[in-house]
Image (cartoon, rainbow, N blue to C red; front, side, top):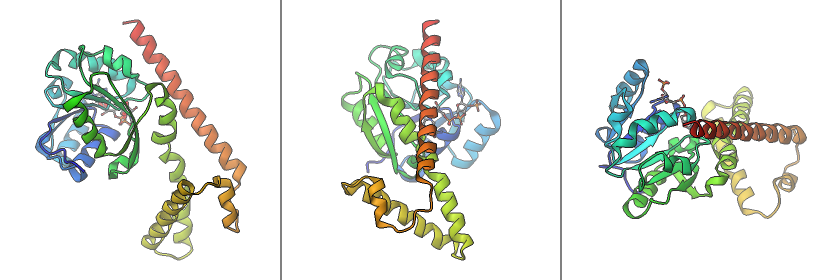
Length: 271
Ligand SMILES: NC(=O)c1ccc[n+]([C@@H]2O[C@H](COP(=O)([O-])OP(=O)(O)OC[C@H]3O[C@@H](n4cnc5c(N)ncnc54)[C@H](OP(=O)(O)O)[C@@H]3O)[C@@H](O)[C@H]2O)c1
């Protein structure tokens, strides 16, 4: 993996995902604390970020705009305000990467000066350990060195898959929200294994290896997951209920993003 060392990175919004990004950049992507400046509006969180990571911090989005890579990790409905702040400060053509769910690539591009290289990506939480599966849509001006920088950045987070911007909400419901569908199952299996008398360490190793193996089996075999269940004798989970629960959760995630995208479009039209 290529290192992010020496690239100046400005992060606007150091909340859950912005903080996780700083963690990953420092722990697994070769970036130095001196390469990163994070904008966070709340004093206690700003102090926590500075203390925990040793990066430079600021309360003003404008202060990070001089970076070579600007990452927007603010809530989707705050994007217009933040884009308005940096619009006149990106004449040096930094790569601007947006993490905001439901915020279309075209709106990102039209909110910044003509020619700005913009990237829309929805990183999922395994990006924290470089194992993300992250759908990305590149703007028209992401070419040459800008493209190389965008790809280097995304490689630090895991696998980036280029997708049509119009499908980003569907990908987000599966991949960015996806870990929350699996985590309760991990939680339940860990609790059950420990309750049965295994150590926590042994249980984690067994459950994680089993999950990885199951994923590999689904990836490599032609049978559907339902058919693959034939290889195990017991069926303790109520299959129809699991299917219904996940389908409902996915539909909820998608409809929330569609509603959010409509709100963003309405706000942009009223501008
Ligand atoms: N969490 C995830 O797993 C995930 C995954 C993919 C994409 N995303 C996207 O990442 C973005 C952030 O999500 P999150 O979960 O990290 O949310 P979060 O924890 O609420 O963090 C948002 C951050 O943005 C800051 N902020 C809000 N308005 C701002 C403004 N006008 N100027 C500067 N900073 C501002 C907030 O500061 P205050 O606390 O002071 O308000 C907070 O630090 C969202 O657009 C979300 O769609 C999140």
